[in-house]
Each structure stands twice: as C-alpha cells, then as structure tokens.
Amino acid sequence: MELSTLLFYEFKSLLKQRAIILTILIPMLFITFLAISPTLITQQAPITVVVYNQDIGINSSLKLGKFMTGQLQTNFNSSTVKFEEVNSFGKFSNSTNGIWFPQNFSTVAIKDHKLQYFFRESSSDIRVSSIFGKEIQPFIYQQFLKILNITDLPKIDVSVYKNSIEQLKQKEISIKGNLAFPLVYMIFLVLMMGSSFVRFVSFAKEKQSNMMELLLYSVKNRNNLIMSKLLIGTLFGVSIPLSYLFGLLFAGSVNQASGTSFSNPFVIQSSILYDPLVLTLLIILFLILSFMNMNFTLFFQLFFGRESGDRISGYLNIGLTFLFYISLLVDPLSTGIAQYVNPYFWPYRAVINIIFKENLLNTILYILAILLFNLLLLRGSVKAMSREKVLFE
Amino acid sequence: MFDQVRKSLNSKFILNSLSFHFYSGQVNVLLGPNGAGKTTAVRCLLGLLKLDHGDILVDNLSVTSSAAKIRDKVAFVPQEDAGYKSLTVKDNILLITKLNKLNDKDVLPLIISYTDQLKMTELLPQDWGKLSGGEKRAFSLIRALILNKPILVLDEPTAGLDLQRASRVRRLIKSEVEMGKTVVMSSHILSDIENLANHMVIIRNGQTIMEGTKEDIKNHFAPDSSLDEALIVAFEGES
Image (cartoon, rainbow over all chains, first blue to last red):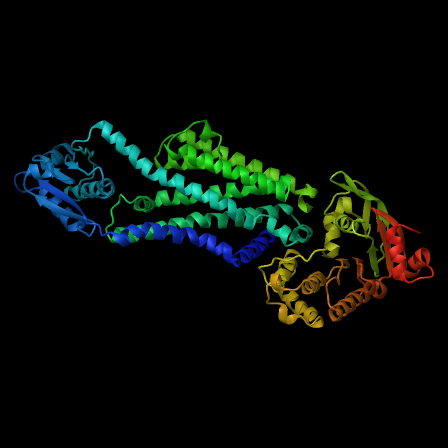
C-alpha cells in the first residue's frame, strides 16, 4: 500500500515534467530520422535471385526442383526480392545471388532424405544472407516435408556453393557482430542517457522540494522509499532504450517496405529486433541495466550524501560506461579484464551468450554476479538510509 | 518531555543536555536564535534523528524505543515548504494522507473545509511549484491538520503569510487547541507568540535557557519592557 502510493505519485510527478517526456521521446525521434533518411534520399532496387533448376526428377513424375522453383517465385516475389529462373549453369555461376537445384536434387531428397542444393550470395549486400538463412532455407525445408508427407524428419544437408569452412566461420562472426556492434552502441547511449535521467528520479528531487523530512516522517518502512525510487527509475530508465527500439523498428519497417538495402546498419538492427527472442532479451537487458544504473547512483547518494554522492556516482557511471564502450568498440565479442571488472558488461555478455546459445556456465556466473552486485548495493542503500547526516545534508 | 537530550551532527553538538516540558492541550512555543537547535529538537522528537544521550517522552512513549508510535500521534509541518513542484496542491495533500492510511473519501471533505476557512479552495488544482511561499505554508498546515493527530508540531507556521491569512491560520490553530490538541511550534513572529503561546521554551546553543509562561519570560529577562525586548535579551544571552 505504502509502496504503491509512493510509486503512483512519483510516477504522476515525473509524467508532468516536460523535460522527462522529451528525454524519453528524443531517442525515438532521433533514430527514426537517422534510419529513414537513406530511404528518403535513395531508392533501392530489389534483390534479384536467379534460380537454375537442373533437376530431372524421379520417373519424370516427381520433380522437386521444378516444384520448389515455382513455390519460390509464387511466395517470395516482392518489392524486396525477385526470383528469376535461368536456363544455364553459367548464368547461375555468374550471378550475384542464386540457387541451383542440381540434376539429382529429387533423387537425393527421396533416397537419402537430404536436401542438397547450392546457393551463392553477395558478400556486400547482407540482406541476402538474412533472407537465405531465415526465410528461403526454412521455406524449402517446409515445402519438402509437405510434399513428401513423411513423419521421420530428414536430415537437412545444405551445401553452400563456393563457401569454404573459413568463409562460413567468418560469416558467423559477421552475423554476431551485426548484433553485437549496434548493441554496444545502444548500451552506451542507454547508460549515458540513464545517468542523466537518474537525477530526475533520485532523492535529489526530494531534497530540492524539501520532501525528504516529510516522507521520512510519513512512511512506516523506509525501504519503501528506496524501492519506489528504484522501480520508477528503472521504469523511466528503460523507456529510453525502448523508445530507441521503437524508433528502430518503425524505421526498419519503413525501410523494408521501401526496399532499402540491408547494408544500412539501422535496418540490420531492426531486422534483428524482429526476432521475438532477441527483442525480449534486449528489453530484459535494458531493464537490468537501468536498474543497475539507478541502484548504483542511489547507493552513492545515500551513502555519501547528495552532492558528494552525485559527483562520485556520476564520475563512476561515466567511467564505466566509456570503459564498456571503448573496450568493445573494436571487437564487441571480446572478453578480458577490462570487461570482467565492469558490472555493465555482465548483463550484456549474458544476453549475447543466450542469443548465440553458447557458454551456459559462463552465463550463469554472469547472472549470479549481477544478482550479488545489486543485492550488495541495495543492502548498502538500506544501511545508508539510517545515516541521518546524509539525509539532512 | 525532553530529558537531557544530547545530539551531535558532523562532530558538533547541536543539542547539549536539552531538557524541557511541553504540556498537552496547550500551545508550546520553542524560541531561540538561528542555530539554537530548534529544528534538530523537532527532528529528534519525531524520531528522525537518533539521540546520542537522554530521551524524549511523548504520552509516556520513549522516542528511542517507540518512534513510529510517536509519529502516529504527531502531525508535522516542516520548516521548509515541502511539496512536489510538479504535483497539484491536492495531490501533495493526498500523498501524505494516503501514506497515513486515510481514505480519500474521508479526506476530501476535510480538505474543502480547511481550504474554505483560509479562502484557498480555488488553489487546490494548481501545481505546488506555482504557489507563493505563504500559500505553501498555509497548505502545509492544512495537510498536517487533516491527519487529525493529537499533537501538532509546527515549524514557523505563519512565516511568509500575509496579515489576513496569518490571522486565519492563528484562528485555526486556536480552534485545534480548543478541541484538545497539543501544539508544539517554533516561531519568531511576535503576534504568534502573543496570541497563541501558553508555554514558552527558550533554547540557545542547544540548551534550555528558560521555560514558562509569557509573563515568566518577560519578568525574568526584561521586567520593565515588552515581551519583544525580553526575547531579544534572552536570545543575546544576557539575563
């Protein structure tokens, strides 16, 4: 009851401050403008994927290659992707993006339960990679299952024309980088803006409006005061990255609808965000980061008093934020002492691990470290709350 | 009752064996020069500051062991005008009444009744930040009165108010005392002291210089002069 009352009026008081509303809206407006501007000034041509169907089928009755070609043309032709059937291997091998169903495509599929086809893709236009990996291959697989109506799932063996193992590894790293690079930049922005935002929500406001004394006298449990600050701060803090994400999603939709190249980094970000798992994890990540940012500042404010605490937490926050950004600027997937000592790195790395399904033990350790760190700060804040000179300083 | 209360902040003694009584059903006025320790005494009374030594008893409850229970009995108007600037006056009042577990249904008629008495009802929807200092002061008092607690602790309740409002506020305080409430207040305004004070406590350098009625104070410090003159003498440390 007490906590909900504090939260309600804190929320109401913050909502009435124009500066706060602007702080929340600016990232969305900024990123929307930045990401849409290439679309506004350039008109991108759709990707052309050539399909060379050499499949002779089985007994001339079951021609999976022909079926797949037809399905691809029916289902994928849009303003972004155009399929064009070609009649020679030369045209396929000279194409920028192409799919080749070889002579024995149907035979291998039926006898060995393998889908063996080849594709080549542009190395400069990475939207092709995304479309192949996320849409075309699953589509072909689904169509295969449908047409054969079989229950025992076949093993998919997709051979990639011309791509060596090294190139594949390189591509994997580049896909990870495509997520991690913008994420590092986003976290940097979030932490920087969050640090300034914390000032709106922290106890500085109570001290300015002389409410501290009245609230301390009015509440039964002082911990509710800390919790109300933390929760409201987290809620408003996370609204900044959410505003950024909404701007990105909106701009991404506009760009995709108009066929803008995926090489536009903002579209890469937004296409990644369309994955519900990634989007959910990002929101959780931003919630955790906002909470940590708020918890960190409150602890210092309560422990060292408003002015000293503001200064110390401000310098530390900015220091850790820059350390986070600079240490990951060259390689967003790197780990070392500069990363391990930075609490803001822990949730970032845990989320990256979960998205790429790697280092389970590592992830658990990061989560435990985050929990411990926040619990220690909370405990410190509660203790500091009884340090009266801090409250009335 | 303050009993040998000692309190230091930042290694400096603010209250130094402070002892005095306040009487129920009366207006008890704390007086003293700036820095005498009045605000610290009030914070100690509310249990917001821990005592280094001594004790404060309110209705036989010790502040060292029962601060929360004492706060339940005390309505408080802080020295500064406390209120969230971006919230309306009404919301600022409701925040505190809700924290004191009062229903809006019971509180709203009281708000109207008190604001009508001070002719300030039309200011309720305004943002706190837009009020003048005097208006904030008056609403701080209303906020405390609505809590309907037996003891009222008021720090400079009429400071910054115009003559008319100051007079209405004094009338309000008087009527609360007539209803049996105890008032502990600090004030530098002579009209407050002359019109309201039943019992006066003079503090200087964290110690009680004297307590008693207006007449006692006047007779002790300046028998042939006014109360004003007696207080100046008391504050300056000459007796």
